Every structure is written in C-alpha cells, then in structure tokens.
Image (cartoon, rainbow, N blue to C red):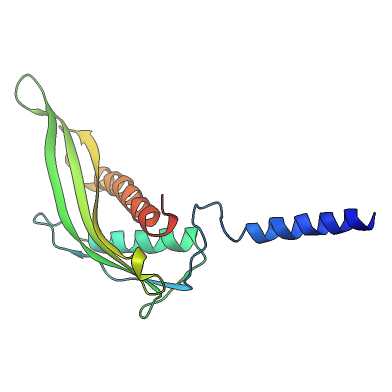
Length: 167
C-alpha cells in the first residue's frame, strides 16, 4: 500500500511537470519572459492608410493571447520588427467580356525575428496571404475590413508558428 501511494504521487508529479514543456497553443518551452513588437511601417508601392497600425496590433494581440510572455516597448527578450512590403489588388479570373469576375487583395510582410536567449532561432522572412472578392466590388469599407482580418489572421499565425511554435 505504501508503494502504491508513492507511485500515484510520482505519476501525478510527473504529469503536472510535463505540462510545462508543451501547452495547447503549440508553443514549447520558451526561454523568454518578454516580447517586443516594433511598428511595422508600410513601404508597399500601393498604400492603404492604417494597415501598418492594424497589423502591428494584431501581431501583439496574437502573441499575448497565445503565450504568457509580457509585452514591453523596449528591451524585449524576443523582438519582432519589419515592414509591409506589398499591398496589391489584381484580377484573378475574367468574364467573357474581359471584365474581372474575381479580384485578389494580396499583402506581403517582411519580418525580422530576434531571440536574445537563443540566437539560432532568429530569422528574416517574408510572409504573405491573399483575399479573393467579387470583381465587381472594390476593397473598401466592410469588404476591406473582412479582407484585412482574414489576411492578417493568417500572416500573424504563420509568424507565430515560425517563431514560437516551430511548426
């Protein structure tokens, strides 16, 4: 009976300890306590006002929601910086009378990721995604908001996976 109690305590302790190595967001053990996201300037040839601020905030929010890292304005253990390098609208399919049946909004973001505690994880990489919409419409108002939400959700998740989740 004494050994049975010991085994139960051992397995409970082992189970609780193993939870710190992996969590439900997909991140492994992160050797950092803080992160910093610098403002992503918009250097795209076609400029849509405000997307630089929106993207920066979405990346900050995603990392805060999926990790226990603290956001700081300077000196973070992990640093995200970069720029929006492309914002384009192009037709993807045409109708018989040479009009766009469907158009595509594409955004590309160049990201520099630095991890002070594990320099080998640092990288610079471009992430991009797109949003298709009817060719008879323009990406303004709610159509633009829906497109940006979908694009930024995918790009920020890809950045998170590449930098912290290692997927």
